[in-house]
Length: 367
Image 1 (cartoon, rainbow, N blue to C red):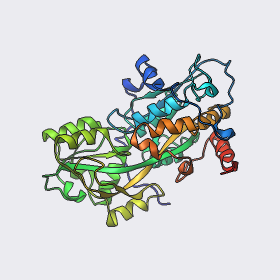
Image 2 (cartoon, rainbow, N blue to C red):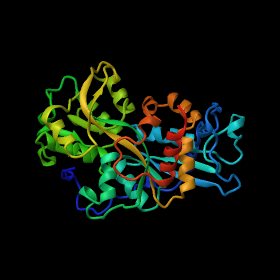
Image 3 (cartoon, helix red, strand yellow):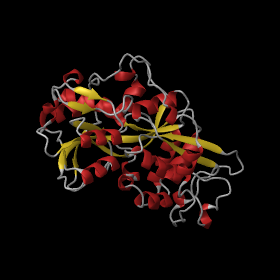
């Protein structure tokens, strides 16, 4: 595997913490618990039973650092929080109640994205996070933009969740036809401490375009969509599972196009490691937008190795419980791609022992 291409650091050793991402607010608790007790038990194997964790233990809050509300991480984080939560007083799983981890209250926190999420975990301000696979790899190894901080050696995976295609959005009437046409243009690269910014710079570099060759801005997805609509930028990047709500809303307001990532530039990206793979954003994912070939990275759910094995095992068991499947299938469209059979695909950091034990148990179950 090659060393990662240069990524932005701005000379900062670690991302800033945002006020929005800190603490456990009452609103976040309510969002994280939405639907937590609404699932019904689906009969199945022993793996479908409620996690075996001491219900008499203390209540435990469990923060999941996600991303901006206009993207995919936050709604997926809310679904994960609902799947694993089992607040005190909930009906038992076998009586149609919550099948999450007894006593656990999970909270989805809005953040800038992958890079900030790693920083929050290192600062013990989040117990877990959603993170792009390439960002997790570099953090674990202490390379690329994490070189100044050293390895995050205790970073562990719970699951690979879904693929995140590179979205490069322009107005349909724009003369920008390809990514190398972005030279000299006003381009939003994602928030300062997001995985989108990191990978946007990599995608540009693969096309021979440097950050200094454009007029960059660092906006949340919703703000970037608004800026494209009012003409204050020419294009924006977003790395996310589809559909992205902010892009969908934009496409309903103005005609847009998505730029492809193909050919030699895609080859360059794939050569950086097992992170980037060829992907198609299907026809009509966004209104009147045809299918476009691009590349994607995996979204991982990560934790710290210091979390107890029993807790992470119970979280994994709740994640793949049949009631969670019903929750995912009825939730965000990307959640339908959260599947047990792909949960270990393309992960280059170690799995937490609790999650690893669960996957061994699942593999041993009759099919």
